Length: 220
Image 1 (cartoon, rainbow, N blue to C red):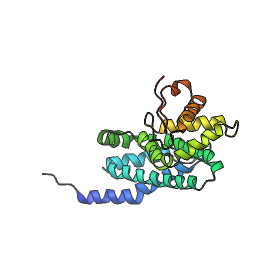
Image 2: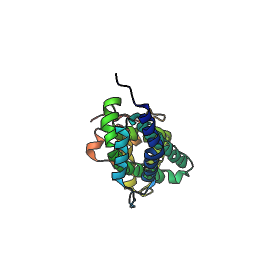
Image 3: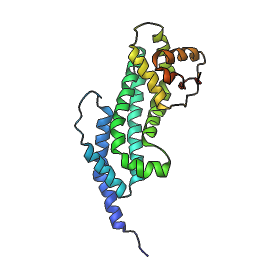
Image 4: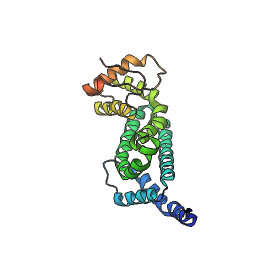
């Protein structure tokens, strides 16, 4: 009967805590805060290598939990920043936060592909990108959606108060966070205005399948 080599397990755990995760955590933090239009000097090959080693050393669950905690902590800070924003800046600040986050996921998800394929999909029956988008929904959008939609409705009534591209980006972004899964409404009067926003600021193929955060819009 073969017994596990506990000395090897302890060694790889020490390596994870002292080397692999600290380097991954730093890289993830930089990816989360960088401006999508700016260049960032991060070695994606090195990040992928750390992820691969963690999975091979059977630290997949630990790595997944650390990744979720790291990103959750970042999003809680984003939400706090939005709470402190004056009303006139909330739309732009939310749009910037959402765009920055989705851009960072385009970098983070591919380098964690091995974790996704070997642990998240087969063991948890989930998808990493969807999990990370759900984190933004839970920790940022859920907390600000009613204020945001109200401000969007007001802005829609005043031409050029907010750039149409920003309005479109937010409406599409809210849909992409939880496609087909609306939030529970707290203000019923938003429904017709939200429908107008969707029709005004989204592509027609999306309008007919879109389920808003504050209301469900069924196929016409």
